[in-house]
Image (tube, rainbow, N blue to C red; front, side, top):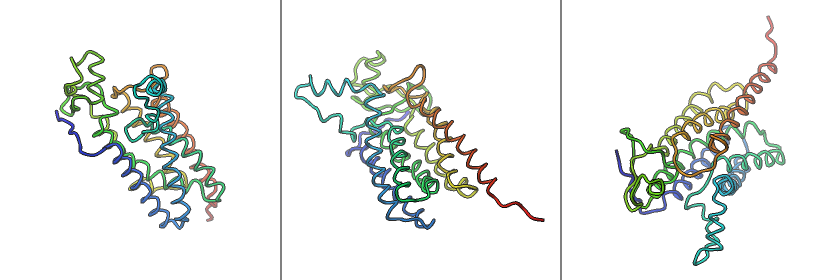
Length: 279
């Protein structure tokens, strides 16, 4: 068992900053190597960063059931804190909200500027898991997205007053939130490792065997959807649900299914478009 230290800087905000910086740097590098418009894709990357924050925050407020809490802090809190809903750097982002809003905007952007959509999406497919690796490390040191209690050797304790301590105190597992949490599954670190492995698979294996534009973004959807669904079963933080599935699990299933079908179609179209062999 290990204790998560308190860092002397805002870990969540630093994690987001590293995620976006590394992702954008990779997009620029790959765009240059593939002969794409680096300046135009840099513009797109900056827009995507901003919109992904908006989408991720919106889904958190709507799907995680926190709209009432933010409204209460604005109307009933003394002093009133109406800006709390905008302070995303303190935590409270749902990745899928940012992903889907960014994809919708990106599609419109690529159509308007007549850029090859699938080829560009493949660049961002490489950047996504790399960025998510740093983002989840920020989650770990911030203390959000924590796991269920665990007696396994990989269990981690969060400091007194952390989100895990408060949740366990409210559930009667701790006498007070002024104590360090019980050991929990390190879901943030697990997510970071899975995302790093996904990046390695996309960049080092699937990219080299790619037969059609769009395969990388489809592979990301399939593999990330499966990994995210699995990690969600170990999480214990408060978040929205649809039936017995968390919101993110439901969206993971939809993403995986859509990506798998699209991948099959792209492969089939690439095979059919090849010129027939001549003997």
